[in-house]
Every structure is written in C-alpha cells, then in structure tokens.
Amino acid sequence: MKVQVAENVYWVGAVDWNVRNFHGYTYTTPRGTTYNAYLVLGEKIALVDTVAAPFADEMLERIREFVDPARIDYLIANHGEIDHSGAIPRVLALAPQAKLICTAKGTESLGRYFGPLDRDFTVVKSGDRIDLGGLSLTFLEAPMLHWPDSMFTYIPERALLLPNDAFGQHLASAERFADQVDPWVLWDEAARYYANILLPFSPLVVKKIEEVQKMGLAIETIAPSHGVIWRKDPMQIVNAYLRWAQGETVARALVVYETMWGSTEQLARAIAEGIAEEGVGVALRGLPMADRTDVVKELLEARGLVVGSSTHNGDMLLNMAAFLADLRGLKPKGKLGAAFGSYGWAPRVVGEMEAQLREAGFEVVEANLAVKFAPSAEDLTWAWEFGREFARRIKSH
Image (cartoon, rainbow, N blue to C red; front, side, top):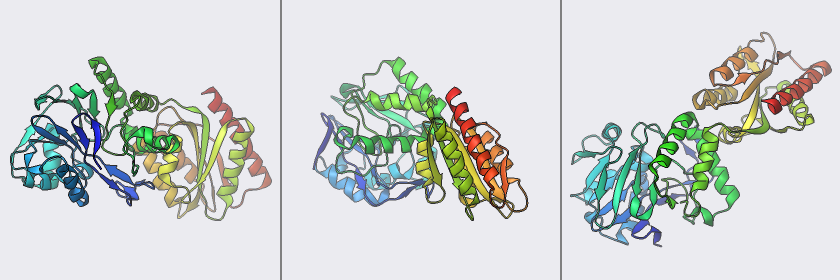
C-alpha cells in the first residue's frame, strides 16, 4: 500500500508490532512502534531517515514501489541512533551515487556505529538547503532533541516538517495518520514518549519551538520518525510539547511505593486517602506491578509525587531505587515531592529518598514518616493527615 504524506513525498518505513522495550529496558512499548522513513521525489530523489536494520528489506520493498533504490541521490540522516540509521549501509550499497547528509555531530555517531563507509559524509548546518528540482530540503539543527547530532528536515514547497524523534509516539498501527487512530491511545503514547525521552531536554524544546516560530515556517504536516503523522492541526502536538516543556501541571498527585511485608503499602493507602479527602485527584501505584514508564507518563502533568519504600539491607527496595534513578535523569520541573517508609532497624531510607527527590528537582515536603515494623493506628492516622496536608500544598502550589 502506497502512503502519500504530501505530493511527491511518501512514507516508506516499517511497523514493528512486537517490540516491547526501548533504550534497553528503560522504556516499555506495549503498543509496539514504527520506524518512519520518507521518500522525496523531485527531479532528484532523497530518502529522509531509514529504519532499524532488521526492517531494511521491508523499507527497500516500499521504495521499489516508486523507484529503484539505485536512483537515490541523497540519504538524509536526521539522527544517528540505530533505530533510524540501521539500514544506512544497505541503502548506500544499492545507491552508489547517493550523498550521505548529516550534521557535524552525526559524522561521529554514524562513524562509531558503522565504521568506515564507502563514501564521505556531507555535513550540513542550520539554513543549508538542497534543491531536488521541484522540491527542496532545508535543514535545522536540533542538538539534544534528543541527541547532539539531531536535526530537522523541512520541505518548504509542502510545508512539511520531518523532525525525527520530536513529536513522535511508540505506536504500531495499520494507520499512518494521527486523525485515523483512537485519540485516547494517540495522546497516551505521545505523553509517554515526551515524559520518558524528551523531558530532561525541556528547556531546549521550548527554545527550538520558539526558534521555529520566529522563522515563520508554514507547517501543514509534521511527520516524525516514530508513530503516526500529524496532518490535521499539526500544531496540537507542538502546543502539547510547549505545555509539557514549560512544566504546566494539574492539581493531582501520585503515590508510588514498593513494599516488602505490607507495612509500606498500608501507609501508602492512608496517604492516598488523605489526599483524596481534600478533593485532589490521586493515583496509587505499587512497584513493580505498575510499569515505571507508565508512572513517569502519569507524573508528566501531576503536581505532586509521594514515594515510599520498605528498607532492605539498609537501603530502599530495588524497583524504587530504579524509579528514583529515572527521575534524577528526567528532572521534571515544578513539582512537589515527599517520602515515607517502613524499617526494622535503621530509618535512613526516607531521608535518602528525600535527597534523591531534591536531586531530581522536586520541592520536598518533609513528612518525617518512617515507621518501625508494622504501622499502628496512630501511624496510619499520621499518614492520612500528611496526605491531607500534601494535598493542600498541591492546591496552593
């Protein structure tokens, strides 16, 4: 099936229905993903991005529906990560005259992944342009969105932005366009994607969007390198990125905990009930039953986070430690945090969790809620009251 993105621009990517994790196991992908590549047919031919190496044959068959791959004149590598660049050697082997286009940083990432290639890199920077005859490609560097080598490709004659990893989703679908899929699924995956990949680069996201807006580029379609393509009201995803990047939140809290014998879970439930008592939305998430990728997505627009752990071998439990490590890397902005827990011998874990929340950028509300062994009725009342106080802080924050 031929998929036209715009006149003389076609999707030639691949759908990965079965992948269930990304970036190692730090990001789960329960709905799979796509690797989007785009064929641009002017008098000369360009391929913008490729696919992961196992899907190279699928991409090449799609290209052959339009042209012989040997006719490709330009191969654009917007980003060197191998889910987008993995098929580059295959394309270059079939297209001996194709020029490989990337940023200066792209020469480093691609060179490391593929070693010496059979031709030199053609390095571009922001504002550089390639005339294909009838269509043209303009490049805009986007370092750290989300790698140092990242750039956007823009086709002015079609008002089409090809921003690689920006504005995407990990979503395998038979449909190629955002308006064809369930809106709840679409936005759930778009938020998961931003929260788990782009959140630490939020200041750069705001800066790059403002830069593009000042350039006055007409944008009728945004075609990312994962997920579906935004062809109707593409600014809806741009505006969502601005909200998320600027740290806009709602009066909502997450209580995330890991328990050993149930004591920490009892405290977690009491805190959540106290938060709800004050009319603030709350979700209770126990690790590892709750997926960390999902919890990070839920935290994206929530204003408050309370974390709890039992103590084991003098430290917090492993899934909570991994969750807090995620947060230290992602550094969400403008959020309140608190910690609680249970212990048998030494009550140091709560203080350690508070320290890690501060390192992740949270404004910490100290609960002083560390319970020895099983919580008493008084302890649970204390936890409930703290939940109410935390909710009041959320409403006034």
